[in-house]
Image 1 (cartoon, rainbow over the protein chains, first blue to last red):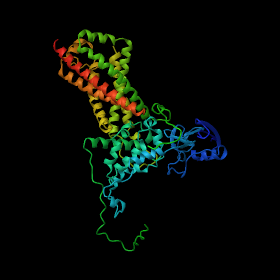
Image 2: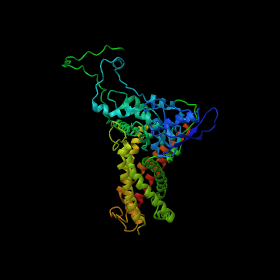
Image 3: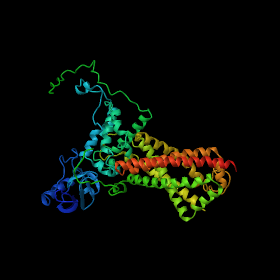
Image 4: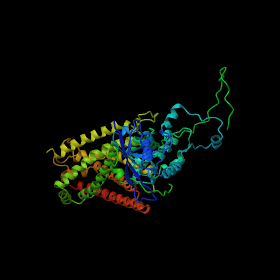
Length: 271
Length: 144
Length: 128
């Protein structure tokens, strides 16, 4: 079993450095150590100024996306042992500007995400803002977008995308997958509004299925699948073959249902 | 798109060509582009050369003589190989980009089986068919 | 500028047209030694590029028409593909417009030239 592990880290301090540079640190290895645990050890033993983003340590918050041994991934979600290497090379996620050390600037990605209106759009604004009941949706309809809704916006897919590597104007896998998540939600009626952006140059047409985004996604969201399904919808739309159902109606109040004896009433609403 | 003040860190062209632990489809993507560019270059030249048939028998035979010889034969052979790959892989991309063969949205359960894994048989099948066409072409062109 | 939603759908459609007609073209030209299809190389049992075969194909209206269809589809498919590759290198906005304009003009020019050649060679072949 290995005793030590060497971290090669790409460092960049905008106040001091003109170029990023690699530095190596050796730390003791313990079984079960994740790449993120190792970074904390490096910070503790060698480089107190080392900067990165992390929060939940359990693959939920999407903060610690970085390039680990040449592949984008979450530092907290990657065991050192699964890399099968004595050296762990850690660099900031490519295709994003570096703020410092391992901290990428994700703001442009969130800007694009926002521009694609990632929320339910409906004409009945009053019902949406002050709901009287839930919108009706079948389990099958839920399945059409549930996978894409697990996205944690870590940016790994953007770092892996070959098109995004050269074309900063391309929307990228995350925002497109999220646009499809809402387009394929039966409660949503915003396809036509999102199409303004999606039909243009920055839309899914820049995707040529290299498949890297899906391969690196730590949550199994499969952005490449979402983008291909979105292209089909847009092609069908162009040919006037797309089925455009009305957004899901408000669910009817259950009738002829009698509460079983002994079931207590729900507590009073707090908001 | 918001402006940032950080240091640019885009992979650039290296992102197209490799530069990491990439998968098979990434290389098919690059090969599809390279073969496409090769085919286009040949095609533009081909339009000009073959249009000589509109003038006379002499013009046609002169044009054909000009593009004969070892270098052109090898070039034509490469174009045929590029065609075999680009055509078959193109059919795969056509299906995939219309959402056929990538699977339905599913509940992601670790270890994730992504659309890339679902379409893998298509990719391998495309390469196999391209190889068969390439072998037939090789026999036909160099078999005499 | 036309939206990519439309251009890209045409790109796919053109790809299908090319797959069919270029497949036929390749059968005629390169696999003729292996899979001889007499209907395609009618005049001579020699090579497909012999003048006698060129004339025979030129005389056929089927060849003249499919030639023009293939020419148009392949030009659009190829030049739109090239445009995509160039635009994905993210050049300056002015350069993007220039690329679009140059490729459009080149495509139209070659299409007109190629169509003329198909019609002219059809007319010429009928005189033999």
